[in-house]
Amino acid sequence: MHPILASRSRLLRYLAAWVPAGALLALVTREAATTPWRDSALTVAPVCLLYAFVCLSPWYICRAIPLRLSNMSTAVLTFAAASAAAGLLLSGTAAGVAFVLEKTPPRGAALFGAGALLYLLSAGLHYAGLAAEASRIAERRAAEALTLAREAELQALRTQINPHFLFNSLHSISALATVDGARAREMCLRLADFLRASLGLGNQAAIPLEEELALARGYLEVERIRFGERLRVETEIDPECQACRIPALLLQPLVENAVKHGIANLVEGGSIRLAARRSGPDVAITLENAFDPETQSRRSLGLGLAHVRRRLEIRFGDDAVFDAGPKGEVFRVALRFPCEESRESIGI
Image (cartoon, one colour):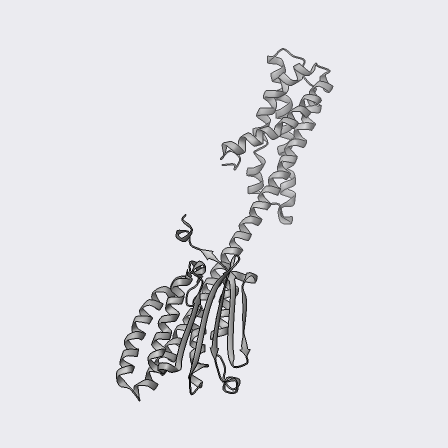
């Protein structure tokens, strides 16, 4: 079915657009037959209404014969014949209506030419409409393909992070087991609880910041069993930003790096400070940890920072800001991205 016929509002708008065309046909009829305006209008009104539907037929021809160089001659011949037939239909119908109304019939040549031109104009508009629709479909498919590619990349990043996290955790348990079996057992139990929660949330594209922070605290509690008083944690969380959605497990690699490449290399340990606040339409997260600059310069931070930066780029594009680097004896990571709240949190 023609798209215009599929919607009443579209059909009404289309028929309204034919009012100027009807006035033009009335003028042609009046000039060709030297008839009064009233007689011309009475003759043209039903003819114009019928011809408006006739000029929907090019849509089917345009779909059957796409406008390409390979079939250009076919399209030209087809529309030449169709426009001639439409012109004859218009002039013949006008003559019939004039006969029924007992009015002076208009000259057929003038109406034939006007009808043929209107039909060809309709064909051109239909080709333009089909080209615009094809362009929209291509853009939509490209957007869908890009979305699928980004989801695949995010899944690949999470797949790389999970073994990386497990390796670090098992290494910590192994180190603790040699000095304190009871604490190693407690760490295993805490780790099991943490993994159960993190694996469930890791399958989601985004979760509230409140849940992500709870995961980070859970991981730090696991590590505190190993490091004891050497690991000190400070948090400063703005309640207004806790409903903002964040890619699941985004903070996990940052917390791991803070422990493995920071606190673990300090004999007396140090502090990890985690802060989150609203900044206008954005949420800003800062993670700072003490570290040994000399030790840090000889060791790589691994995949963590690169993954976090890439995941922010994929989800938020240029609206996300990521900055990481040492500032004296403190390593600082700063994130900034738009706050996306769930429908439940805003009462929808």
